[in-house]
Image 1 (cartoon, helix red, strand yellow):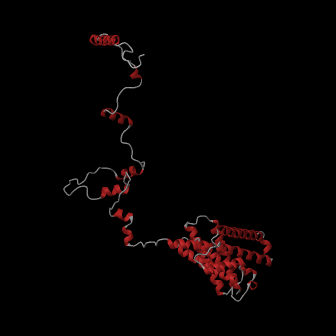
Image 2 (tube, one colour):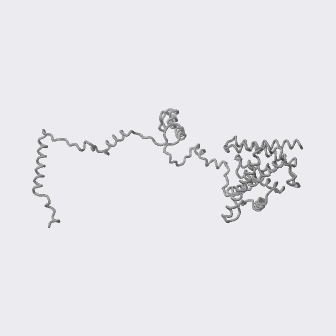
Image 3 (cartoon, rainbow, N blue to C red):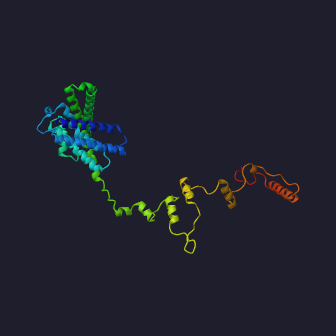
Length: 357
């Protein structure tokens, strides 16, 4: 019996060390973190099975029958449930159900030893009456639900302060059996509060998962609808991408022979190094590149007649008359005489007959 006590104490201490390492780590999705989760679960499972083999707790006992050093083992199922919720290697529904079972074992054990307070006992009865829709703040009145949540939050805060105060000087607890007992009982009460909150969360999440559609089985039919499988068979769908991917370009170049048996080309082709083609396809912008410079574009617009020369300083400068061009000089003289004759025959204001007095 003494060897078993020593063994369960070592297992529980190792599990506590692993649990604290998980709480201090933030990479919950990494493979190392999940390996640590499985290792901690294995340690606490072994600790739980050992406690059952040596009959550490009995239904015929009361709180006073448990030694102060064994009170900490009441939390084995709680730690199992808490660590199980961190597991992401299996389905979420399975994780929630396993954690729910462990939380229930924890509450059953505490209820056996009458360690649940009056308020927690009522919550436990409500949970047993309706496990699927259990909530810590029952009722339809929003104000009452809010007050209940505030009250439980304050109780949990007080328990944390009490636990922090009791564990402030661990050296003083080594020889003080009363302080050790008070410390473990305070820790148990704190985890009871957290257990009911976790059961509330688990019930809500299970309801959401029940409404989710079933995950289809990845069989042969599912592979037929896979995009990569269709791409391997050459089945392509509509895409608004301007430039095809490199894999498609290479697939197009390899689809069918280029030359017939007689040496006749069956499709147009370009002699190009495959490495150069891959490099050009990778190191380029996502958008389509221009095909001509700005100067080439302007020259093309001039050639098509889309641009008219002029404007600027050239439009304001008029060339002087050419004295050697007598014919043009006579034309300008005749034009000036005709304008003078027109102004003499039509004085200013002649046509204004509407405003005469």
